Each structure stands twice: as C-alpha cells, then as structure tokens.
Length: 230
Image 1 (cartoon, rainbow, N blue to C red):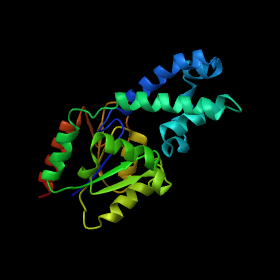
Image 2: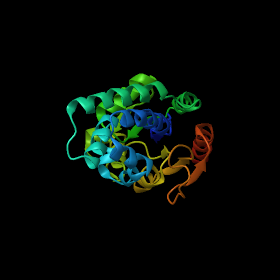
Image 3: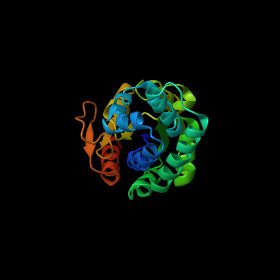
C-alpha cells in the first residue's frame, strides 16, 4: 500500500499560521507607511496568486518579497529583512499539528503502508516545517515541489511517487485541495480522500472519491478500502 499525504492544511494549520503572519504584518506596514501594500492585502488581491505556479514553489519569505515587488517597483533590502523576520517568527509561533495528525500517520505505519509526503513550496521552507513539527521520520520519501521543479498543479510529482514504489498497486492520496491533491491522485489511479479543512474547505470538489472531516475519518476510509482488497 502506498499513501501520498499532503502537509499544509492536511497535517498542520499552515494557512491559519500564515494568516496570523499577515495580521501581524499590517501594523508594521502602517508604521512604515506602506499604504499601497496594506491596500493590496485588505482588498484580498493576493488571491490572484492561488493559481500561480510560482506560489507552489516558493517559501513564505519569497512570497512576501514577490508580493512587495508586485506593489512597489523597488523595496530596500533592510525593509524586506525586517518583514521576513517578523513573518517567520509569527508563522512558526502559530504553526501547529492538527490533533489527529500523529494518530493518522501511526495508523498508516501499523498497516505497513509506504507513506510519502508530497507537498508544494520551497525545499528549505517545507523541511524547516518538518523539523519544527518533528514529522520527518514518519515518511518513507519526501517529494517537494521546490526540489523537483514541478508543482502539484501538474501530475509530475504524483507520477514520481508512484515510480519510487513500483511494487505498490494500492494507492491513496490524502489532502485538503481538490485541484492539486485530488486531481493529481486521479492522474495515477489512486483512491482520493479530501479532508475538508483549511483555506480551501469551502470549494466544491470534482476529483475526490471520498470527502471526510478529519484524518481519523480518512484512516477509516483507507482501512475499509484495504479490507475490500485483501
């Protein structure tokens, strides 16, 4: 059995932690009189980045730089550094594992599943999260878009995961986003399980075989499906 698991908003509260970082950034922008940047955030123009391939390859600091360069033609290194430190500190002070994450991963290991993390963003950023959350040892392989050069908007990383474990014909994909995790899973013939939480929970899914409220329910689905095949 091969289980491909997403990280952000599936195992941990990434978007919530990022939201706190943005909220903490607002008074800083006011203090620095960066009113155009403030307006960009308040009018939610950052939503235009959701379908951007670059969003899926960069870390949070790089996204802050990208966002500032969209608003201003030039920004000083000193200003950027100050914002990076503020955002990074706020993000990691608010980043938490969901309460069901460890039980879910242990449950997969108890089933002798090969577990692969398949996640977007930069290598440094995602590996830093894994160290901070003490998750790395639960995975048999890590596939990070910043390392492969392909985001989960494309099927490449899902195909790569399947190639790394060619003997495993029973495949599941567990994630929170339909147009990346679920669609990618369908590209490789996996059973797709959408966990409805986080930033994208209100979107209507098109590619999910199962829709669950949490990882406990996702594990039950995998166990039930596995029993059907044995």
